Image 1 (cartoon, rainbow, N blue to C red):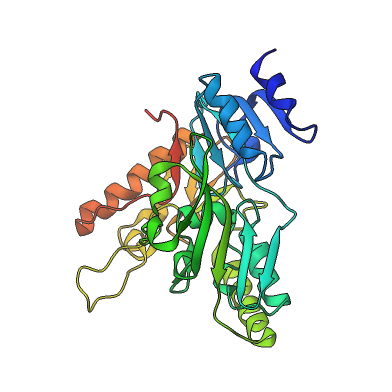
Image 2: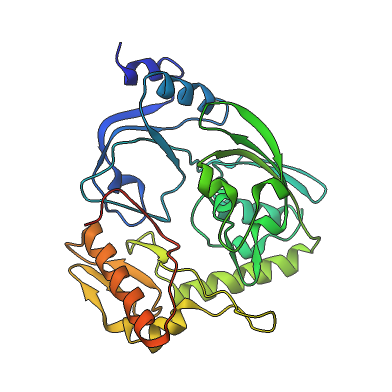
Length: 311
């Protein structure tokens, strides 16, 4: 029995492909194959899958919606578990909300509005899953997920599960300890600030309109959101500055490499045109960072994750 067949015995609902192209599971729609792509796993099934992969000596990684990834054109050697569901798993008790890590962030934001269980509207329109959002401490408009997390049930790479509290995840701007360990959020519990449905709905509508005006629609335009993190303040009296401002001032908007180009409305977003490769995106990001370094002496830090070999 090969590894794929053995994993299939865990559940008939698992979708498993060998030598699967990863362009199919990222919003950039780029990237070569992985040896094994596993989709449809629930939080309850993930530990057993990981234990089988470890037993077989097969390296692996877990992704969510693939909204923040660029996979190398040659692909990667790891098996990929896609932990992402379009069916939300959410329970609310007052303003405390428990949600599965594979739930989409925007679905969680919508749930909190419709059920008036607390304000998480800043997550409106952000692609990706709750688990991925916690790992990267996703946020917008001055708020981030780590601000509201109470605890998380996390799955270690050894297949063991334990509950961790907020302070154990060492949240920082667009960062958590999970980014370093690669552990997976199975469930998370948030305590949300109270608000009224009418107020939250108005804010959700405002954010959706803002995103329509300033960001590409990743459903129709291949991209992965902001390439670089915003610039951290150098003193307590300064505010965080948008990386897009520095890129604009450095003339990065006119840069392009192959099929990779800068989005016309946002200097910190790369979009894929016809014939674009993952290497094109990497090379363009290098040119963007170099332009800002030359003009301002600032080292930009990537927010998008590049996986695999980029020459």
